[in-house]
Length: 244
Ligand SMILES: Cc1cc2nc3c(=O)[nH]c(=O)nc-3n(C[C@H](O)[C@H](O)[C@H](O)COP(=O)(O)O)c2cc1C
Image 1 (tube, rainbow, N blue to C red):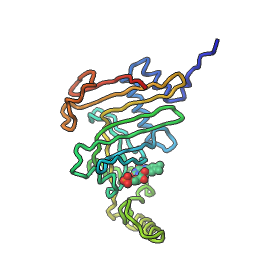
Image 2: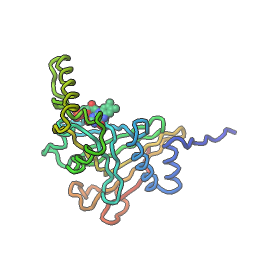
Image 3: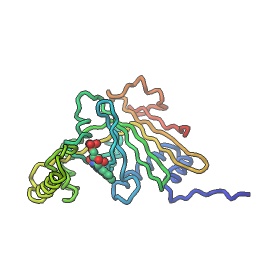
Image 4: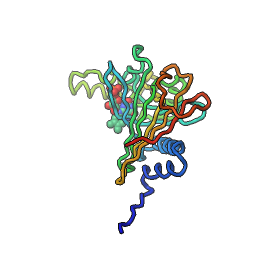
């Protein structure tokens, strides 16, 4: 008789499935948020880098981003991921575009070693000015501040490689010589409305999804919340296993 394969508990995907089986999907998703919070702490940890997609003129635009902060507390209806960006960058302009409302975005983490993919859909906005100031003053190193003293907006055309070098030198000069110079630093907030995991396994993949929708959220078409399983304290909620 073949020996049963015991899943390695060092693999995050296996841990999530074990929690989901034993304590239910709600707890499994809470565990995922704990890993995501931990992932913000170091580039060597899982869930540090993700892909964020926004919409530009009906065209999805994706880019790799560092997950800087994951907020999962009672003060916020939606759990949030915070990203740092130049406020002149195209992704930030997608948020500022008045014609796009509500501003949906999607975000994916894939951790190959941990056999898990996390996919989210949500709304994006700019963080409050006070949070941007606080992060700039208290959380950021001089090195990470440097990128936000770029004299040219990201994605601007540069006529030659020499111009590029000059621009780069100016950026380094600005960041070291003029700490009071106003920077282009900004924070993008991604508010999670739905989150799903896919755990890869040799006996088959396992997939589940969670929805959290605020009843008072004007951005959500409440006729479309047919997938909701239960309603609690002003929130439409559901956790479902999905066919992989
Ligand atoms: C590993 C990695 C991490 C990145 N992290 C960020 C980030 O946190 N914020 C950011 O604005 N761009 C980041 N970038 C750059 C973006 O992926 C992208 O090239 C750039 O921001 C384009 O922005 P746009 O979509 O606004 O044109 C990162 C790139 C890599 C390769």
